[in-house]
Image (cartoon, rainbow, N blue to C red; front, side):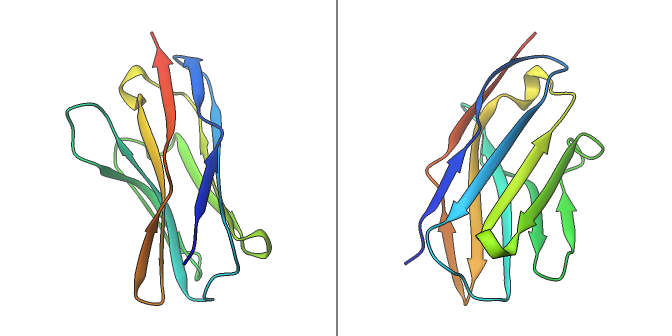
Length: 115
């Protein structure tokens, strides 16, 4: 079992920046994909960004050019740098890990962007 621990959420004004971090509790299988999803009240959970061990990324159109996903494999950690934040980015952000045929979720961290 792998636990994912997120940090870095908070309240920020529109135009500001935040950096989310997600650390896996143990070493994970070398071939994997880590990413971020978000869910606003009344909405379905949606993909924000993913990054696999080969370096391939996938971003939601709504965050392209503003958000950057990166990872530190030695620390089993994935990051999400969020710039030029908008009120519509307000949501609970969840870390996700796909590895060895299994999927894991973090507990979520709240991001609130005020106008």
